[in-house]
Structure formats: structure tokens, C-alpha cells
Length: 274
Figure (tube, helix red, strand yellow):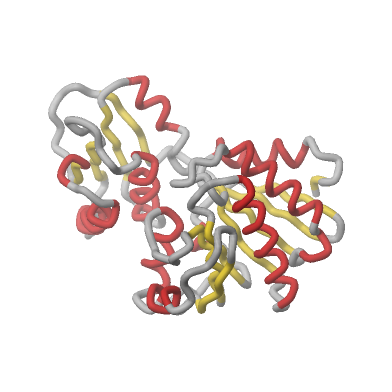
């Protein structure tokens, strides 16, 4: 499949549909993106350049644009100030073609795939959240849009939860799943992420959920390195296989993230590639 997104470096002014300089929050950017994509234009230009320090993380903006473009014919062009910056951000563009790899650990199947987690079918989808269960950007933002306005009040009624803890809500308007499992991994610490993975596996086991889709917990605003995240999934899946659902689907956003998980599992003799 031909690439539908590009990141270019330029010092010149550009006519942008969305200019990051004009917005303070990711929610504001997401609203601007929704307007820019109205009518399915052929091209949307997003200027990521700012005059100074900006609170928004560029990978979050890129992922938000990618989700808005999902299923549309629109091409994306991101503009940054330097080629070095462009090169470092190109790995954050979603994989142009979906990749899949299937492993077995004990009697359980573990699938690693690229894509948008809200489009993945499973009995439950995991949301990387915070202890107060407030919806934010990334997976949370995608779920907020897909599930509808009922989701946040349902989450707030269950808050707070401890770091690494879990709370379950309905998926409301989201049709690819019935349940959302919210885990507090915003800290990005290995202990919290490991606890969250264990809680997800145990909850699925206890409540008869046979499949679950999980993002790379802790790697967003938590800042956990992808290789450490993959190692935590490896060890928790292998160490608690008896408590896991029959299918765990780990959803990566980029090809590079997918490669990290797949390489980690391939190197471990406890995992057999199907």
C-alpha cells in the first residue's frame, strides 16, 4: 500500500489546515483536525512548527491525525523545522499495511498486530488511563470519540483506582467490544505496568472474557521504552499463562513498535510462533 502520510522539513511558510502554534491542548487540535477532514479532502497539511517550547507532544498529534484519517482517502503532510526532527518522527507514523504475528505461550495465543485499537475486535479493550480515570489523548482520546459521551461519567463513578489498578465500564457506542478495562499506567513505571498487565489477565480469567486487545501500556505520556514494555508483556504473559484469556491481542501503532514486540517474543523459548 502506498504511504498515505509524510513528514517534511521546511523553513518556509506553508498554507496549513492545522497549525500547532494555534492550539494549547490536544483536544483543541483534535477538534481542528475534525474540521480539516470534513468532506474527505485529498490532502491535509499539519504544521508542527512552533516558535518556542510547546506543551503538546508531537507523536500524540501525529497519532491523533492518523486516527482521524483512518478509513478516509485523505493524505497527510506534517511539516517540521529540521530534517533531523523529521527523521525522528517518521517512526511515529502508523504502519501503512497491517502486520500480524501469532505466538503461543502455554495454551494461550498472543497476537501482535498494527492498527487502531478501537477497530480491533475483542471481548474487552484496554485503555491506558490514570488513577482518577480521566480521559486524555492517545488511546483514551480515541475511545472517548468511539464510545460517546457516556464513557467519562461511567469512569468517574469508579475513580480513584490505585496505580496499576483496573476498573471496567461498558463500551457504550463502540461496536468492536463490549467492555473497556481502564488501567492506571500513566506513571510509566515498570511496576505499575506489570501490575496492570496482571490485573487485565486475571480480570479476563475471572469474568470469562476469552479475548482482550491491549495497547503498549505506559509508552505514551508515561514514557516507558518500548523494549521494556515488550519485556514486561513477555514475562507477565509467560508467568501467568494460566490466568490469561485464550487470546491476547497486543496492538502496536507503528511498524517499529510491532518489530520490538515480535523480536522480544521470538527470542524467548517460552513463546512459539504459529
